[in-house]
Length: 252
Image: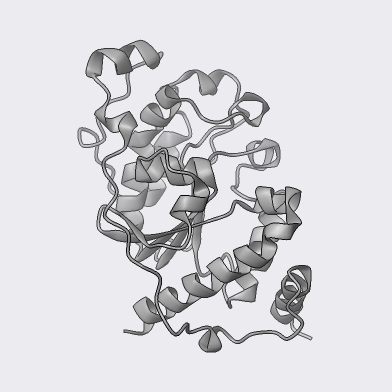
């Protein structure tokens, strides 16, 4: 049996679905409601004086430094020292996958395994993400995977506002270079950071949002599903709706 089919069946068994479901059979009778466009991130709207007090070394505005390619951006980001995470990281974890991908998955920050290997989502949560993608006919070669910030916060704590602000230089230009057709945000922290909201994950799931005109879907972080396997069925429902929109966008 091909490895991709094994991934699909393994994930579907995990969530209690016994019969593999074709990507083309995932259409729903109704589409989820489209949420109003998200307001600019609170981090971006903070007074300049407050931001200067938060960031150890003020980050240049994202529109003052323009990089010609994703590789150039990655190379420059690898030496970043715009916040205190530079003192505790092993290495910068920029992103991985297809630079021409239509779909980008975004988590909150690297963990221990990612910090050591320099690639996002390579630990247990990353292995589950691989199975989740395989269940809807995707793999790492078809998508791009990144985080809202590029360095691991100590003890995997949530990123602070000053760290998000400093890393925004890389985050915005990374997405601008990728030009995806859609984004999937993994977990509460990534969703609140990118959409600029304090709404709960439950409130953000099940509706389409926007980031700079790009459709955005919100679902659980794989690490949360590992801790709360009873939520995997809801995660599967999210994946089915994501697959529907992905198919519509890429086949139109």
